Image (tube, rainbow, N blue to C red):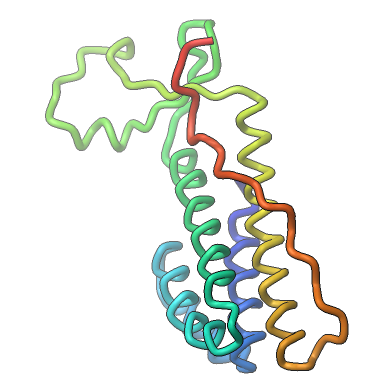
Length: 169
């Protein structure tokens, strides 16, 4: 999850490859604050370019994968970890709970989300997949613009992992 910033750089690279203007893309994306805003700017800058290259659907898939990675990242960025009274690994989003109207009388009342090593590994693999999608789209743009001789192979598609475990184990 710490590698999320690499996805923003991959989006920058992907969009600037299609636009041919690294400077303008970098400045547009990174002048705005916040990860969602940067994705939105990158999406807006790249969408038409990729549609003209007949890669609109692929670009959208990559951007959506990145958005899901942001969702994974954000749930951990604003959480506190817990072992749920020695039973299993859990996290609590205290900021989310504090915004609610229900009174909380103690730690036992906090909403816990559970994870395990297997799920964390699947989430990490999805981050890798999102980055691979961005690189593939960038390389396909270069191929379609005759800047790359060999057509790249797409990464093997994987589904979105769960954000957390739903049932007790």
